[in-house]
Image (cartoon, rainbow, N blue to C red; front, side, top):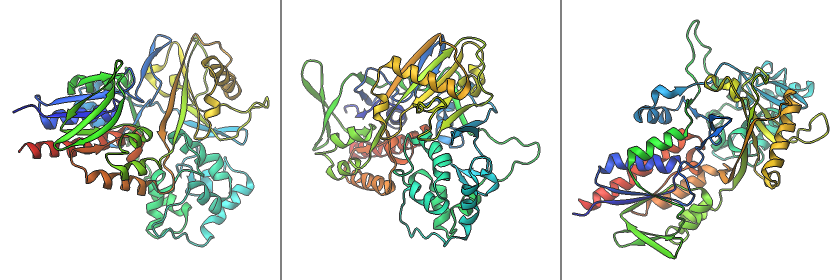
Length: 472
């Protein structure tokens, strides 16, 4: 009997995690092929050398409180390389001032007036104080834009100064576009339960105060040698045939499987498999499913994407950074010299991560929100100059970098708009009716690494069940 053959389209964390799980489910004799149109594996996980140090220029960490990534790290034998952030706090630059991110907020939504007293104006504080007395919110299962809800309940400042920068840091999006249910599900659940006030809803989701002498578990984690270590270990463990630089132009259903039509350097070609995991961004999924699963393709077309860039700076030894882990910038902020800020966030990596302390001093600046493609339409030198300007205005640092790197992420950050959960349900319902096909990735149930791994595990299980059942 011939070996089972499956393909994974997309070599990012979702695709590689799917290949890893397929190997466990299908055994050592299965032929697993990972097809990636770029010249490298890893997708948004990319570790390069900056100033002689291993430095992540894509995703820099994962949510440790979700189990999927931490469990995979342990499964791959990397638990001894797991590290967590220092106790340095993050900050927000809004209304011309940099302040610590206030505690007792849910992604910036205040649980009380006191929580945001240092961030809002007197008028903004009055709006927060009055919010619980407004008529109760009734969503009745509907979704709403985060920005519209915040303005209605709190006025403009909570969204502009707090929630906007925080959601922008996660989704590279704007509150007027992002939907409540997909981006702030805890708040939506509390409102659905009958809590009529977003402020009260935020208060109900706050974790209990830590017990005396009991340390809270870490929120985030990363790997000492960079997250590309996960990429390498996944490829080694799953042992797929890896085809790089090979775009897939079509998925074609066969009587007993699928044909992947690809573009080679010489001519169109293709190969046949029993099952496919599709782990690519929304625009690519839309194209590949246009003929095979048109209903899913149409729903993928509803997902907009954002582009961004990471500017890594290695600063000379002795450069003094603020005693913070970084700073998020509110949209539309202007520096003291009258020049609008280009960056949306800075991570003071040598402060945030103990393993990156020392020499050189490492900083990463993030540029680009949804609708800000014009900021990225400049060459690398201009982007570095703009980010250095912003760093100087925020921290006073003027040191000439000893090394820099600009990494662009074009169109790969899905925007979880109003009704996104319905879009995802439509995608998954359409694909569920098609044997031997499954989808995974950041478009679906979360943009973080753990969420991507969860979709990969589910997709691998679905495809494995199909091909094993067909053989039997």
